[in-house]
Image (cartoon, rainbow, N blue to C red; front, side, top):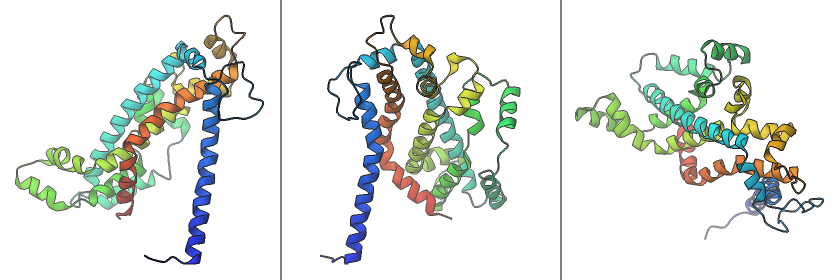
Length: 290
């Protein structure tokens, strides 16, 4: 059995203690809001607790019965699915081209793409471009401006450069063209990085709200994060009144806000465990290739 030094054991103990504190500080606010969202309106939260005295789903029934929240949920779902599929597809296709050694001026185009990570057109030119393209109040205004992320493209390119070139040569000898090589050979071998890209983009699209606030002037097109922002941060009484029934004497606005936060958070948390096993592998392989 390999013996560890005193310094190594102290480092491991400090590392574990730090991770426990970090996990507790991350989980505690989430558990507190979950407890509040499951509590009846009569329960006092003068003392902070993570285990509710009584359980009820009345707050979730009120939130999910409000049309504004339902429209926001559907808009966010459409944006997340459409944006994730398109971003992964375009990123994989572009990375496949950049990973080829015979691609003309590959180094120049790679550096040109990297430069976009440090310089951008700015908010006003982006807004004018979206407006002139008549994309306002459409889901395309939320998806097209960030269709290919430079950082994700470089990570995917590095991953594909790590794949053996002999596989492509064997496929070409069997008569496969570039499109068939991409679909039949590269994509099946690139599932770790594809799952990583899908997770990044799904989480990003689900949590994004600022572009919706700018490009959506019709409230029916607001995504769920904007709905939550109007209800929770701005204290929009019009939105809260729409959520409450006429007999709202037994309704606690704070428990409704907690339920709203949980409704916006839980869907993306449920997705993470299914792609987590690919996440570390995709990141490690995609990050080390030069």
